[in-house]
Amino acid sequence: MKNGKVFLVGAGPGDVRLITVKGLEAIKQAEVILYDRLANPKLLEFAPADCELIYCGKLPNRHILRQGNINELLVEKALEGKRVVRLKGGDPGVFGRVGEEAASLAEYQIPFEIVPGITSGIAAPLYAGIPVTHREYAESFAVVTAHDKSQEGKPVLDWEGLARGVDTIAFYMGVGNLPFICENLLNYGKPASTPVILIQWGTFGRQKTLQGTLADISEKVLEAKFSNPSIILVGGVISLREKINWFEKMPLYGRQILLARTSEGQSELAKELMDQGADVIEFPKWKKTALPVDLTKVTSYEKIFFTSPESVDGFFTALMESGMDIRKIRADFFGASMKSIKALNNRGFIAGQVDEMHETGALLIVGDDSILKKEYDQADIMVTSRKEIDHQFLPLFKRMLDEADVNTMVFPSSASVEPFVQALRECDLNVVELLQGLHVVSMGKQTAAAVGKAGLMSHGMPASATKEALVEYLAARPVEEV
Image (cartoon, rainbow, N blue to C red; front, side):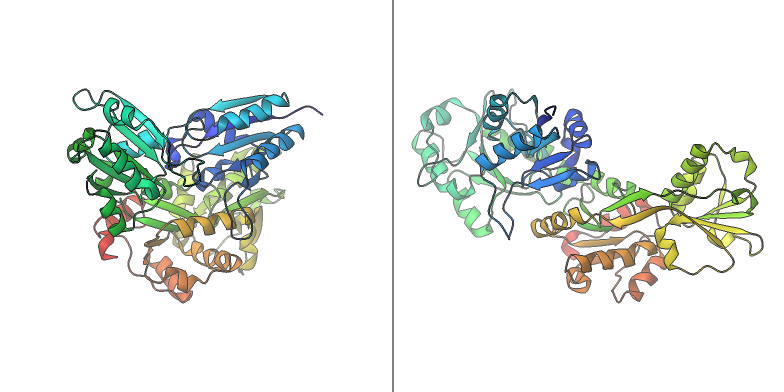
């Protein structure tokens, strides 16, 4: 059998948009992905539906995968002829042990590529408004591991060289050793007034910072109970933060949003919320299987009603594959939502809303298999696809919930409510308990009614059911008030 190939990919610091184009291409073509805790799980949603996902961190029901086991798995999957991605947080060459993994692959003559990523020691400071170099403040920069393999886990470093020869120092994962770090830098000549900042979950909407000096930062960290994953940055360039702190001024910075998802893939709404500074967890993750459709009667209908944007795509794909001329269809088109109507508009058709649909005339309803659960009077049904929850992502969702501090819930449509509640049951999660204390937002009156019907509280809605109105609504309500 022909050997596969391994891509050792840097996932970047957290914000999914910071992955390289080459890294994303590798994910999209992967057959197996081995991923770390610090690689944002949202990146895995770009993988093919049948891709095998292997978590290399610690899970409640098993121990962490040791480096030797990871090396063996990479070799094993590649020897099976698979296209394998090893997805690592930040840059694989910066404390990522990529050299060990690459050496194992080379030993078995397995082809591999190393795809660089943006390292958190540079990205997290920039998202906190701090360039690590500046011609007036810092002409040198060092990245340093803040723990090692010694019995006490204290880093053995050239402290004198760091203290006297480097302007800006980024320590990785060193919160537990912070007093030791400060003590050594002070002992070797760094002034006690040297600025220090800790950046936790850098580049995420939940990013937090804590600023001080070498003299007082350790005490501040204890008081604030600051923890990893954090970058510790030391140097005078931190003073620039007052002028160029940009990320924390974004309209939705601090909003950690759980968004009920109605279709596969990232929604435009999620993208807009992220673009405005929010963390967004979309749930559930859906997978769709296209189904064969019978088009023999399609020209006989006077009205065709599309229940989703995906049903529009499925319908026209089936038409093209059958070779049917669209001009033979004489029906008026209608959409269940503005998104469905827009999908029809994008194909050159003027479509009406459901309440504009006249009562007379033969009607065809097009959608996925969920429309079979409903009763339609005097209408035919065309099922274009089967939609089901992707169970491989349920444990990922639980882990994202554990690591985040969600403060906002958004239901984008009435159709999103029931599937969301049902999917939570499959995760053994109670929707009432999960939403307790969250600011629950419904996009429109019909959605608010569906939320109420599910036995949940809805705390408000934007002026209109658009992503722009939602951003405006959330931005006008500070997170502290939620």
